[in-house]
Amino acid sequence: MVGGFLGIIGAVIQEGQSLNFLLVIVVGAPIIEEAMKPIGVWIALIRWPQVFQSQLFTALLSALGGLVFGIIESLIYVTVYVDDPPDWFIAYRFSVTLGLHATASYLVGLGINYKVIDWAQGRCPLPKSSRNYYIAACVLHGVFNATALVLGIAGVFDVE
Picture 1 (cartoon, rainbow, N blue to C red):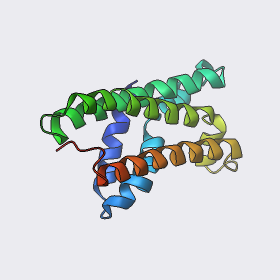
Picture 2 (tube, helix red, strand yellow):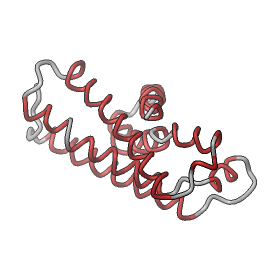
Picture 3 (cartoon, rainbow, N blue to C red):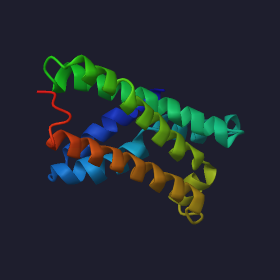
């Protein structure tokens, strides 16, 4: 769960360095956030690899990191970004977006294993399943963000 908190910090730093707002929302944010949200799982895998006996367990821990990330992000949206948010927006932020973040992180978690750490250290190729789960999570997140953006532009998500 600490990973979800650390992931928020990393995502804010990385996303804040981009100049193209639309590209960040649809492409950059998913790539950065899906890499950062399970950072606690990565740290634990390096520190205590014997704990990770099941891919399901790893994916569930990743989903918890995504859930914490989503809660923090939603709190920021309803308290900082949007002045006097309507009830529907608060419900949306604390239901749909939490489900998205937990689901996408779960997908990434299905691909987290020690072989990815070996890849990062140059000892083997990136496992295809790890790559594919990560891409699936990024695509899911990107489509979600693009849809929310289009609905916002169309006035369906009018929170001002």
